Image (cartoon, rainbow, N blue to C red; front, side):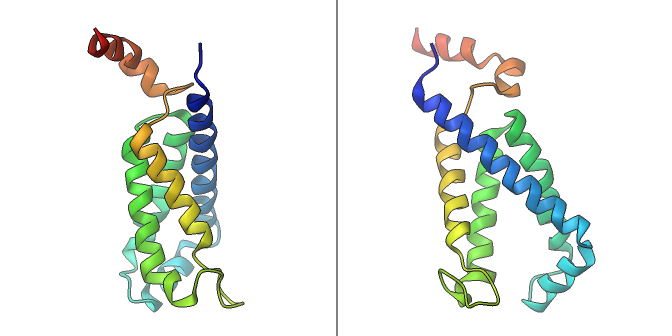
Length: 141
């Protein structure tokens, strides 16, 4: 029987995956050069725009399918801490009218930390590939 917390974790995992995937795709669709320029304007090396966009796309897909959920969630949590400190903290929690604040970043951070701590096995590729149920049963014995 599926536990309620696994259903909740599945909802969080897929939601976070979709949102990060969309953010990553938009960076490429809008012209990654624009993101590179913005990164440089806030004193972040331009190549990091590629790193962030690729992490968002690949990590988003990984979360959606349930692959390496804990690892990807840790990376997303670090990304949100970095984004909040470098780009969003100066504009405040709710923003300044021209730029969004860090309220959404905090929500993404909270979801990522939850998934990093608890994981999400329901409907996950990792569960199929690595037979995580068998490993849990061995530990319980």
